Length: 170
Image (cartoon, rainbow, N blue to C red; front, side, top):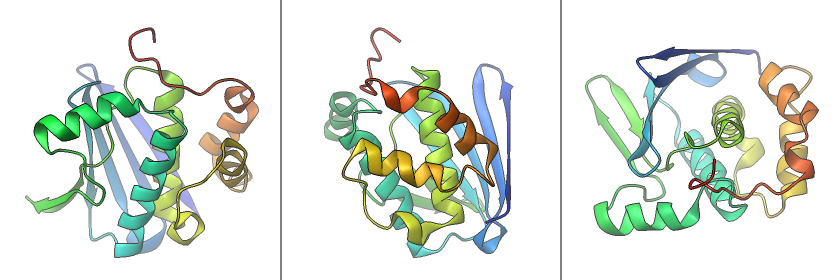
């Protein structure tokens, strides 16, 4: 599970990449807006298990209301964008399109991006959505000794309080 995570801001959008893990995966994340959402562009070929793991993390984020379920449902109903396993292969990459935006909150961004990163590196560890905040926190904590972002999340009081997304206030 040796991986590196880097991020930079370009013209107001967050671009992040991850290297390491199965298939030496490279993930590029581009954020646009809360309603439009963002996509995750994955270069090289992720395994079906990795795609299922991304869906599991997305479902956990929605079920725990770390991402805004009402906005995600609205986006899906209006545009059809955001179904589980919603991927598109073109222009030399796979685009994972299921997750709605996390840009409204630094906390949501950190938890969502770290969750996807850890799912890419160890998809078996999150094959099913986590059913409680404690289980999700414990999963992230298992990576804290090897991943700076996981450690940062655990060291912050994120999981001590309410994780409910409030895009209209954050």
